[in-house]
Image (tube, rainbow over the protein chains, first blue to last red):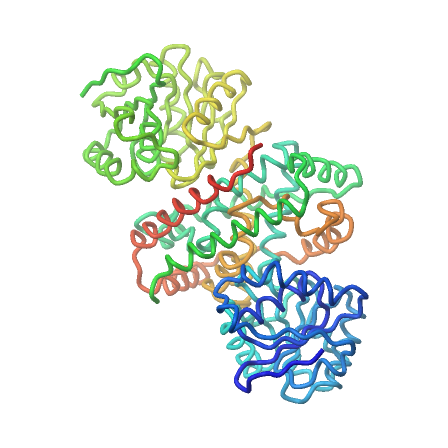
Length: 312
Length: 312
């Protein structure tokens, strides 16, 4: 399958068209970019087009359907990479797989193509270690589901290349955050796992059920975090004195609390307890049903935020 | 000022009508409860009624205005407590103040009145230590702003009294979570402070600005946390295999990440840096402006969630 592309719209290559890759494809195509996808799985092409038909019109800021970019599926990676401005790599989260794949892409792609990995937990310095042109290989970590959530975490060694990628992501509705240092888990997943550690610790200690601990987020601070991060939340928590008052008067009690935080022991029994409590909290709804409901609410939430955004 | 109360609607006493007390008053009155407030500050009565006129119609699930409960302000605490089913204590967050005040309330109130403290950081076993009838003293910790956010964390030593309070809070639109054990910071604030610790650590390490770390929540996982807590989020993160798949295949990499989490050193210079970065992130908007915008969005978000709620 081939496609013609207007000169002005960026061309994006998708390597691995599973959950993340297909979602990236929807995001780019909905913003008028041309997408060229490759995935070695037998049913990948069919699954990709099924996902697109279901998801393209849910992408926040999507263009009218007649302005969507084309999405082509290619049998060979060597053919797919032709003319790409950016490659999004979404292979399984294994260091050896990524090292080999990124080196192959580095060999195949023209020198001005940016090669971006969606990796959530691996380090750029490791996965790009076999590439000749390491500078054009970057991290571009999305948040699931990538066609809905704006955040993309960027890290690379060449500021001009990272800046070029950042502009490209912004033009398809993303909110890029550029990391100044390489870090295991980047930023967002370190924050979620710090929170989850304490959530698991309290479950282990028998303070409340998984369903009730979840409610302590989704009926409380989680509602605020959809609108602003922890720093701005504490700025408002300081009342009229803002963050200044918070840090000087309320901060010390928060710092003291850190010493009381715990780390759960992840025994087999405890893991079984977690699984069983979370399943109980679904009240019998399937993952697909809950995801569908979440994504509909995410769409509504993002639309509401976009219309409330201040001018600066 | 006095008030007459229909027999069937609960009567709530508010001790301390500042930010939290006034917000509680709005919540209860909007649901038809009678509210009796006391606060020793000179301008407390004026500030309370000003807050109510501004906030009553923003309470989620508020009754039509002609069904709102009355709110009376009383010059003496001894007079205010008469006929109250529940007292909400919202005094300053100092252990000595709360110990004295709760003991006084315990002396004054009729034996079937529940006395609830809004404390965020103190332990019930300490603040109720001078009360004769310790069992009727409980924790009922709201999340700011209490007239909007549904979460209320309950802890007490007598299950029947906690259950009675829980029913009362549910009937004014709250989502009570009953703690099975006493814990410093209860549940939600332990989760927020575990997250904030790692946020501060990354700021200290120079990974990103406070504004960018905030975006890593509000443009990513924070959007999901408004809709579901960490356990259900990881259930969906496990794809079709759900929490079972997540814990067994992705959990171990999360556990490994915990060892890489850090604790910032809260030097004076670092605190000044935090304050200056958060102020920069406000782009000149006042605390009042940002709060107003947040509360409008919270209202819209809660309305959207309420209409999307599944039947169970």
